Length: 217
Image (tube, rainbow, N blue to C red; front, side, top):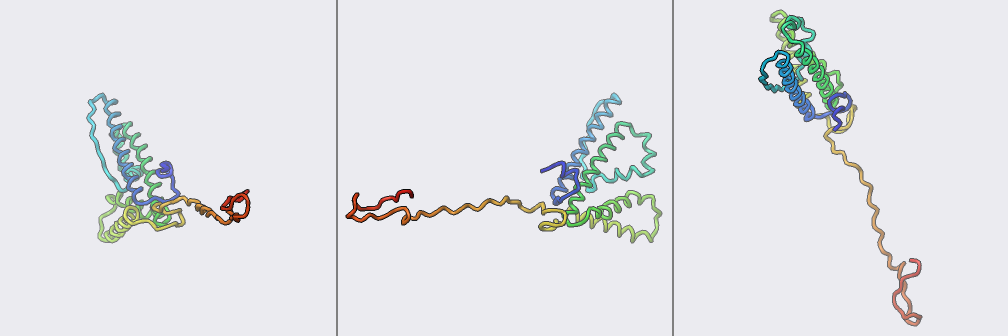
């Protein structure tokens, strides 16, 4: 597998299994990043290192961290956040966000949908969920909330559950199709034509009669 294409490019198609695999890869990287952050904080603070391992599976690839960059509530807590943790968080969020875009868009291609469907399926619902606490509580907003939740559920089913289109589509070949290299047809073995290679010599001829191989055959 071409891992650079799989995790960082937007062309082609991937099936459900590869999207789930990308989710697992991001979870492992996030866990590793958390360990590195704990080590850095222990070194800078001169404290004893006590590792706390965390392993979370987020179907949105920690997309909420992207929305925190435009959330004014986040900047109020920056003063209490150490610089090393902030840098590691920014680097990790950028990497995970790119992997999410690359794999999710290729998965939409597998469903024969444009990559722009990621906006109504993922970004609009997650943006609404993140900032819903800032919206006024009102009864007329409930149907809109249900519609956004249904849209998010639809996108979840499209990305992680429903199989892709069978066969070749406008975005490329079926990733589940078995690709078999055509083997050249074997030429049939030539049969031995005895009548062309053997001749019968009459008994009166010399040498004695019998079967002899023709010269030049």
